[in-house]
Length: 571
Image (cartoon, rainbow, N blue to C red; front, side, top):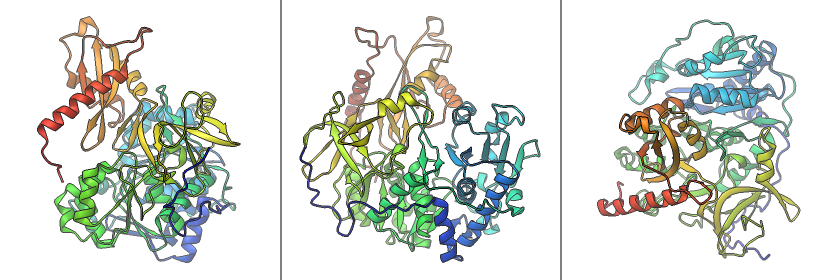
């Protein structure tokens, strides 16, 4: 089938990259050799050079292998807010030849237990405020439990001048945990200065196992090797003109692929500097961009809408920002216009997934289209196919977006049924089914049209309704549940639960009580923000709940209400 000619492909960008055959840890070593005194990460007034970062990573890898018995291929949970210790832990685990399992710091104990059990992790690296969720899982000697936990306090290594209204109390808190069997201090482990294994991992070894929520309610681990992560990493660098003197703002959570690549792996691979925030703070971000002359920032639209709505943004010099990029949701047209007109900044929209190590499609910097996923990037092949027949469709027709490329994961962890339904062969290549409905225009630009799979996009975090519904059914009052996505001006979408209560509970339960109950059992972004009690849910002739009908009705009512009450954008 004839393909779009890509008339606006960026000059100087190759159609395919010659990808390196080395692990991610190789680049940290090279950066330390090239730029030993250069700041690798700046955090709350502290600076960690590349030489110091490498020394800490090597010592941690030595402790993991020599004292804790971590072996090549072992999985290690990592739970923390953004901080230098996260970077040390992430690269220390990989330097030991093991696999990082990044876990959202908002996860509950039961969610963490699932990741531990599914991945087979027997060790965790945890920030001290998250220890209460992890300690019940630490049972040395028990076969199906954590055998060791390394814990860190964010304040370790911070200078006194870090005390500021912009720094959260959790970051300033001193070391607070008490000694326990199987519990180890990260700083004490590094202080032993044990030697790392003589050999770095292989480029084809697994390095990170991020989880994406599943359509059936069970999160699935995405098997990424050093090679798949680097493929996405390298393409992003070339596409956006990033280099060793770029300065990155890292505020998107590092456990998420957007933050992991844009605020961790890409900068380290380049030997660039990362200015890191522990959590989102608009005024602090504006000050840091001005002070450190930040030039690259990857962030979801919801974060940028909040940032540029803050008065601090207008009061700071943001002229150093050269690349403002992200994805996960479309940037509203009105917001994009204001960014361009008021701040002289063009938002570079892109598209990627956990399964593709983030970067897959991107808008050319010099020729982007608004609310567009972009075009294929170096080494990527993307098509639009009929979801039923998998036959490729012509330009302009809506179908499922499928893609292949070197950044594609090696498959879902121990989940062959999911692999069978997610991958297929086309023209001698293995393609991945994204579950997104899109179309491609005559110039090769892809546009999102709808979702084939049920999903809620909350500030860039994917939430699968089936997972939330499974939890809601655990409530003793819930007879039937349907979870849908509803529009939200700030977050993109919210999770809404429509519930039919059992007769005995009608009039005895408030919607807020259900919301609070859900937040105790799910990460905050997954838990319903809106709950509505209904007398019944519409069903098909076969008894299936008509979720799409409910979702469309709610979106129509929300759009109507917004049109009646809104006269201007908050910017």
